[in-house]
Structures are given as structure tokens and as C-alpha cells.
Amino acid sequence: MVVRVIESWAFSEASEAMPPEAVLERLRGRIAGGQLETWLTSSSGRSLAIVTNTERAMVILLDREGDPGKHAVDPGADGWSTGFVLANGQHDDYPNEDTVPLEEAFRILGRIITEGSPPSDAAWSVDR
Image 1: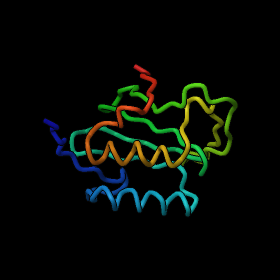
Image 2: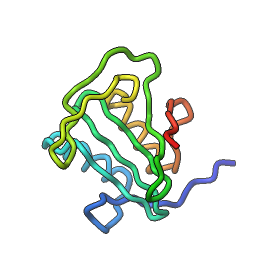
Image 3: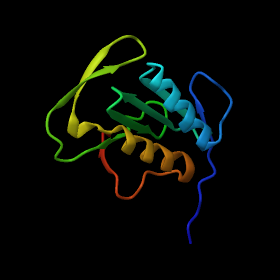
């Protein structure tokens, strides 16, 4: 028996929750418009972040405020990627193993906002 998590998500700067499909569509629009860092908050107090350079993305999941959380990883990926621009204007570089391809990030985000947890085949690094 699969238990579905009843949790809604909203963009951090907005108070209104959106259906999962609308969240992903809006997120794609934000990235296309050059907004490369986005935070979502859930009705249960969790936070979900994506920072991208439009090719790869850092996906972070926090269980509560102050939680170091965990982030999606791509074990064995070589090299570094640049161009991750935070909302405060900071430019970051990340090892590719600490990021995932952008479409994989959307798959992970979609599963979290619809089912409450990442796909079982997605690799994570626990930062706690």
C-alpha cells in the first residue's frame, strides 16, 4: 500500500500553494528568464531549493528551518560547473558530482512535490 503525502508547496516569496504541475511550469519559466535560484516551502515546514546554471542543478531538501538537509548528487560525475547565480548576485561553482543534470532535477522535484520524497533511484548526500 502506497501512502501519499498530503503536502502543498509554494514559492517562498508567495504565500499561495500551487498544484505540482503549475510549480514545475513556473519554475521552468523562472529559469528561462534568468532566475537561477528558487526556494519552495511546504505546508509541513520543509524547504526545497534549486540553483541551476541551466544545464546542471543543485537540489536541496531541508526538513525544517536550521536543518543542514541533503542534496541530490551525481556519483562519479567528473569536473566542475560554473554559472550558478544566487539571488544575492553571488556566482558559485560546484563539482558535477554535487549537482544533477537539469532534467533530472525536475524529475526529482516533481516526485518530491507530488509524493513527498525523492525517487528511490536518485542519489543523495546527507549534509546533517
